[in-house]
Length: 437
Image 1 (cartoon, rainbow, N blue to C red):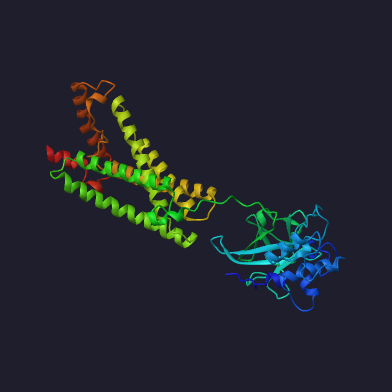
Image 2 (cartoon, rainbow, N blue to C red; image 1 turned 180 degrees about the horizontal axis):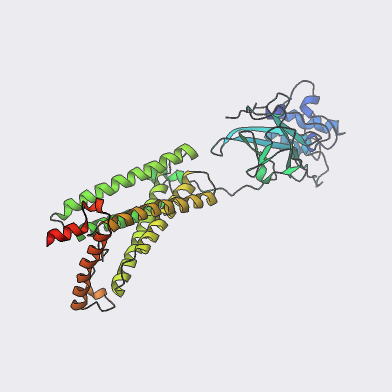
């Protein structure tokens, strides 16, 4: 982890002639007083004395500048940045005279922070040596690794000072870079991530603090809780429907056993992703991951049931591609939702992983299943869902057609059996035919 040597903000020197030193090139009032910083109430009169108003009283309330001096005294800041002036005089924009350097941890949170005053060159140095203004404890950083220049309008650029590893900007390594722009002020040197900020930066708006409702059990947004609750109800209804369709002798015990299995599996899945979120992002996010798996399961169960009703109503033959397509879609969406909320990888990489892994796994399982079905002479592939006849929009086949199709099943099974190798049958098909005779 990187470490930055902290510096006292009040002890940072402000060079003469910079916007923070006053209207003229006079030194800071506290320093001019002779030994350290005087109290803030004394800074204002010293600054005015240096600017040509030496007749001001010792309390710092010069005519026409009493309000400015009082504001400086109340805030404890140096009054030299405002300068003197008659009533109604315009105050010039002091520009950028300091930079805040944040050292970020692996979660993107601030590990340490340092405020640095800019000198006349408007450049700060970063490195591992004591001569650097920002010292980072990183074995992959040079003594003077990089310099960051701050333009008066707040534009940040970085220059590589002859390091071996270069600098990382925008996820790319740049060796020997000069005046390279820093989007968002983000910079990585070695294994250390830095963020440079000025007072002209654009920050995101304040976010509502949902944790204030933690005592009521609503730490997560209500929409997330609603998705998790609705998904749990739909999944429970589907488990009950599946248990009822099995026509068990004791429906209650069958439903309870199925629910226990489903709850155990979902709990393990949610706990796995919550643990990953805790390790990578520093947050558990239990409800978020529960909402992802339960909400998505409810949505895909509804889609699958709608397809089953449509297939039954139109008397369409079963389609293995439809089932495989829905399975791949479900796994892809599930992985994408978990990856984008449990890790810090980009959405593009998350989408790539979410698509490739289900395709590879489902394709392998489908191939193995097809191989097993070819060797199973009892497999017919007829797995139609039974629904009320009132949903049928297309007339079914006649009994004669049904029995004629059923008669062909024996011939198809015999053909598959003869096509199988002899070692899998335990003997030749001809020997079995002769024994039957």
